[in-house]
Every structure is written in structure tokens, then in C-alpha cells.
Length: 172
Image (cartoon, rainbow, N blue to C red; front, side):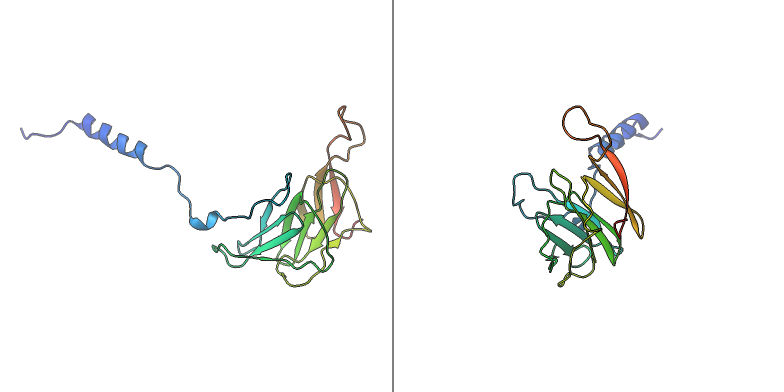
């Protein structure tokens, strides 16, 4: 009989090799560097365009990734000089996006074109519509669901209970 290594020894060595291999893989384009926050309670809010490029907002600024898988971003030029500490960024299409103005009190939802980084107005939805907004997403092309502290009863601590509001992009 030929000298054959024990099958269980082979299995044990194989299993050891598999368990010691890295279990996480990621491409370099899935991570990108952001600048330091410019305020103590700042935030970054990110969504993406149909081609996968990121659009993100931070304190009084919004940026669009120049090329998919690239680290370079271009800042949007806001001709309306809107200010925000974004509660969310929601992109519906390459021509329609909303940024929640944020802060700790009721504030505006700002409609903009996420593909146009040149001078454009970030336009308040409504006249302007103000509601507490912590999160938001597009329901369809002309409406959003917005979460915030807008309930009809007090939460027992401070302010109102959390609620979900249906909002159209024309503010009605």
C-alpha cells in the first residue's frame, strides 16, 4: 500500500487555510474620503445618481462625484445661498433631488438638480413648507415621505411624537 496522508489531516489543513483567509472584500471605489466636519454636530448625507456617482451634503454645501469610482468631487454652486445641516439627501432621478435642511427645529426641504453642479437655486418646496425632517425618501417622481417630530401629541420628553409626512414636490 502506498504511503498516503490521512484524509482527516488534509481536511483539517484545508479548513484552517479557509478560515484564516480574509472574509471581507471591497473595491477601492466603495470608499471615499470626506473632509473634516466644519461644525461640532455636523453630518454627511449621501445618495447616488443612476450611474452610481455619489451626491452628498454636509454643512451648507453639496457635492457630486466627478466620475464613478473616482475620489474627486465638485461642489454645487447654490445661487439661492441656502443653508443647511442636512438631515437627508434623496435622489429620485438625474434631474430631481431633495435635501432636508435639517437643524433641531422645523425647516425646509430644498429641491435641486443633482446632475447640474453649476449655478442653480436650491428651491424650497412649498411657500416654504417647514417641518421637522430627520429622514426622507422619494415615494414617486412628485412626492416624498418625510420623517420627523411632527406628530399630533407630545412625546413626554420634549416636542412632538415622530411621524411620517407625505409631501409633494410642489409643497401641497
